[in-house]
Image 1 (cartoon, rainbow, N blue to C red):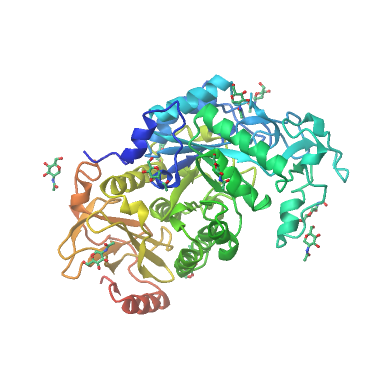
Image 2: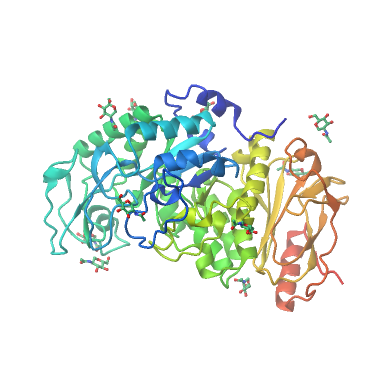
Length: 537
Ligand SMILES: *[C@@H]1O[C@H](CO)[C@@H](O)[C@H](O)[C@H]1NC(C)=O
Ligand SMILES: *[C@@H]1O[C@H](CO)[C@@H](O)[C@H](O)[C@H]1NC(C)=O
Ligand SMILES: *[C@@H]1O[C@H](CO)[C@@H](O)[C@H](O)[C@H]1NC(C)=O
Ligand SMILES: *[C@@H]1O[C@H](CO)[C@@H](O)[C@H](O)[C@H]1NC(C)=O
Ligand SMILES: *[C@@H]1O[C@H](CO)[C@@H](O)[C@H](O)[C@H]1NC(C)=O
Ligand SMILES: *[C@@H]1O[C@H](CO)[C@@H](O)[C@H](O)[C@H]1NC(C)=O
Ligand SMILES: *[C@@H]1O[C@H](CO)[C@@H](O)[C@H](O)[C@H]1NC(C)=O
Ligand SMILES: *[C@@H]1O[C@H](CO)[C@@H](O)[C@H](O)[C@H]1NC(C)=O
Ligand SMILES: *[C@@H]1O[C@H](CO)[C@@H](O)[C@H](O)[C@H]1NC(C)=O
Ligand SMILES: *[C@@H]1O[C@H](CO)[C@@H](O)[C@H](O)[C@H]1NC(C)=O
């Protein structure tokens, strides 16, 4: 009955698909996003065998290929899809490859023929809307692109660009060299090698107006629900709110920084409503690669005070720009913890294609493997995990909008664990991630977050337990697995855990834990007051 995670208002708005749904930030907060790189997701004929050995040129994925594989995404529980830029790019092969990714704009009014025809793209949006899913389109506003011979300064034929067909729309050439100097990284040109990324003069009113006109048309022509603004940090501050306002939809901007003030100023100064959450991305990676979970909580708290709306940030651990999580550590339990955190964290979660198949590609372009090499295996463990977690999240949202309207609270944080509770009493989701990896020992952990005598289900193992008089549950940890606890009553009608067993210790694994970790856990738990750690015999 309550199995649909769709926001009723959003669903009603989408019933008018065809008109622009003009989705706002509140509606986007209820969504969970699957990020698609069109060239690497699916081919029109669905073929999975032809390899894609050279990752710097086209692998020939298309919009129609994506349409044919939407079940793969929707069955995982995602309610939005983010896709590569859709406009016409340069055709040339350069010393840094070809424009398979869609970021090398030549003609903003043309459609990218490699990905399909205009009607293919319209069909994609219509099909997504039919499924009550949102579409987020990536847009490039910082620059236009042209192949060049690596002789500096780049000689650019501006007349080839549409619309910015004159040098007067661009900043004069200089290479970005001072990454702490906003004038430098906003007005100079990015990475002048192979391709000249001719830097648009986004402070000029001519560029602001043309971009505003363009994005307004783009959103309305294709009924786009949201935007990702590529390289937002590299355009003029004042350009951003005007561009977002002109679009009429939710937009978040790429601000690649791990520094709270650098990120949060975009919300504080009303430049952007949201940004992918690079602040937590870094400590999260550190926690799973030799560091501590406490760093994640510390950043979470910093962002909560520094930003005006952490609920509009985008939770993620992988994207097309960063090395895959598994390229650093292929342990499956760690990948499961990372995915659990991303999908249940505050903000709008994004899973990047291939993360659910535990792809291991390192830096660009190796993190852009063709998804078809996985055979779209829906039995893959992380595919199944994403499906369960999206069900949990979508259900919690259906039960109460407060789930996405309020931030989570910390129940326990120590070097190896982070336990959070999110959502109002009755439909809260309590989850614990850890960084022990799959060789992790078995032990018990007391976690609060419930009401006295609540019947609770751990949804990844479908085991039950009962909260004590203080709302604390005794949980059994082991093999480094993440845990997700919800009140049993909240699962009614979701199809999650139709059969349950009573939770009990995991047999046969090492029951000892490094004492330093134990001691600090005890200390943190004792200070927190409502959670205590103890070890099973
Ligand atoms: C977003 O749209 C919904 C429904 O159309 C509306 O109820 C809500 O007030 C809007 N929120 C914001 C922040 O504009
Ligand atoms: C993609 O299509 C082009 C043009 O049809 C072809 O030359 C190329 O071999 C294809 N690439 C792959 C990886 O199949
Ligand atoms: C541009 O600057 C970057 C440092 O920001 C440097 O690594 C690169 O070599 C420079 N490129 C050119 C072509 O000057
Ligand atoms: C910042 O960068 C601009 C543009 O490159 C340059 O003119 C200015 O001198 C730099 N400021 C500082 C403090 O380095
Ligand atoms: C939107 O559609 C109109 C009418 O077909 C067309 O003139 C315009 O160029 C399109 N704009 C964009 C950004 O695609
Ligand atoms: C936002 O756009 C509306 C119309 O689309 C316009 O009237 C308003 O002035 C714009 N506001 C800002 C801050 O640009
Ligand atoms: C987990 O955290 C501990 C304590 O900081 C650290 O020693 C360990 O290396 C981390 N584990 C992994 C897999 O990174
Ligand atoms: C799909 O994944 C499951 C689980 O990892 C595995 O057992 C199965 O062999 C895979 N199927 C194919 C066709 O690779
Ligand atoms: C849940 O109820 C407890 C008291 O039983 C209260 O302290 C806590 O703030 C409530 N949590 C939420 C999110 O409403
Ligand atoms: C579950 O929902 C069904 C109807 O949808 C209802 O009859 C039943 O009482 C509910 N059970 C619980 C435990 O809430």
